[in-house]
Image (cartoon, rainbow, N blue to C red; front, side, top):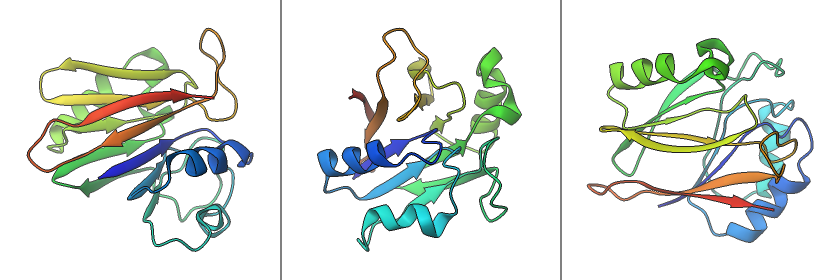
Length: 163
């Protein structure tokens, strides 16, 4: 299963559309907040394709229909999705890890920092941040996203991709 993971698009969907075009076909899409659009508006970039879209609310989102966090089960994996502002990811991932492990998740995905992360240092948890697809803050400031490959019974594989 191929999953496109993006975050912090802040109403600028050009690079989300480019990532979709580059990675198509996908089986699901995860957005980790600060889309700054309602879910129906954002879903239109999928152009009517039958692809599940899972979103959470970021600190710049005001659509109350977005959950602040959610657990998604895909291909036998439990994925904790948060934006990150409510679990202090700018100061580290300790709270995120505790939350994910406490909910029997094997993948924890967050945004908010605009800096990409692929961290497999926890024995039973893969920690991911796709960075920002619009306003990156890491050295080099390249727009980024993650492609997550999931297969039941196998370790998840994540690849950071840049524009």
